Length: 139
Image (cartoon, rainbow, N blue to C red; front, top):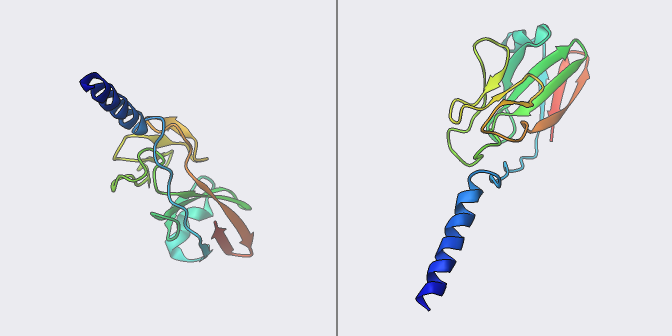
């Protein structure tokens, strides 16, 4: 009987260990619609291609990246690697060439794709629509 209990304990530990790597918890869903005025000085970085800025919304905030004058991408700042860690918050690197999570060291390109792990999933992307100088980000 003791062998069965030990075996069950080992299986439980194995399952917990894998939960921190391949089966990371998902980022919670947040319903929102966030309009921003691109002429606002707060979003001056979004006036140039590959410019990036922080915007309120989502779970832990958003990063908006301008691809060109008519195309913008919006990403969740909550890192997909160990999403429940309090420090799992993506930021714009000082070089302005990529996004990073200083907590786990993951890096993402300006299209939200994994550049350097341990994250295995891209950043969560939200819908954007442009009308005049108003960019609306929605989930």
